[in-house]
Length: 591
Picture 1: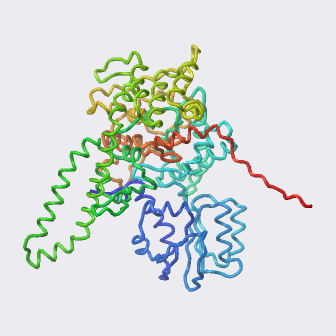
Picture 2: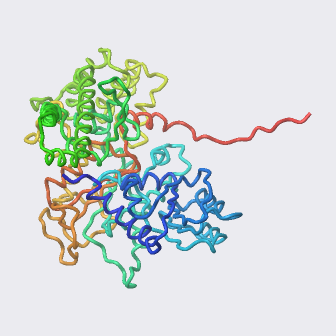
Picture 3: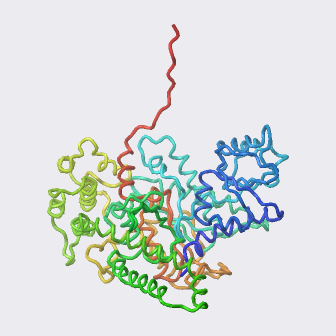
């Protein structure tokens, strides 16, 4: 089974880095030092490892901002963002006394003239200076981020002082994604009556794409490709990131304390262990989108496989069989380690589920769906909510349930809201609930005749497998409607159109040349890129893979400013009303 680094975004990014940075440096046989800033460290880590770099002649990787010993006999590759901090650090390496024999400088994105002119101070040491247009992170095969969690506050806070600047930066990053994929997509956005951030970002991206593709290598204007880029505000679906999800990846990141994709657990000997949950782990790729019930079904099979492997290794073997086993041992050990990790993680998830989450899920699903398990309309949502408020659930879980109740009604009364806040005992932190209005989500019901109504959802009653997992993220409806060419243009207007008609078939417009090589066996030349402004949750990420697998007509890629969990989103919502930090200087009085 192919891991995420073997196909998709990670493979494309690594290939582009090899074709630019590595190819330039390969012209000489000298081993080189690679110097990275914080962003490019994350970028390289996401698509390659140290062995890959060493295979390409890079022997040392250093931090741009840390003190480094001079290595005058070696050439250094600088891969960094085009900002003042990085440029200053680079100049300091060569200004007085050079630290390296020469410098190959690569910027992730367009470098402003002012900064470009400043690095000319070190011109005699610079062999190459290029902009390579990769300023996004390929998090998974079909998921990218702009690595900017602070964008949430910058965009949605009523006190924001850098909203336009943040949207400009996000637009630049989206353009580098399109350029890396060699796509010039048609751009659409979700029309919103209260917020127009998606519209503004769509306009920015379209202008920047036009500027980027104005002239290609043959001095001909590049035509639009058949790809589509859809931009939505986070407020378009407030339910999905709040609901308790029971698919493995979403559940693990919600219930377990996983930081930087690192899961900490205790080994059989009681020692503290760590495991990275990423696409280098084949078992993780296989299990991550499964329902926890399916994952737990796999556990006995995995245990039997491990036991059988151990028994086999204990039996008498010939020298030939033993030699063959020794060759396979690193792979075998890796597989056993992966299975042990997921046995532990699945067990931890199920423990949390049985302790508290199971009692929440039915009520949450009824509130989210507006229907009970039998398909009957929930006539009194308060009766569904009350058991959660009256039982000893955690405060965050009660907040989530209250939000789902309010979302189900499209807003409640001031009086009812006050009572709910008192019930949850968050009188001093009511912003967890009230600040959703900054995303355009109704918290207080509007009496206006033109108040926003919930759009009708796709009927998925025939697809459901689990009563506690009936909700489907709204973005999945959008993805399927785009692929089937059914997306309502009055709600999803075109900022610019792509030439080919998306009619749900395998046909590609005659104007769109078929791609010479596909990412995998289901790529057909069509791409749909979804960008959620203000964070994407794990259940929405899963939808990109599900729609790609189900339609087999296009590859769906989803991205955002950052990845969010229910806990991180609630904190971000609460903090929206905080005033920005202001710097000031205290002057000492002189006597």
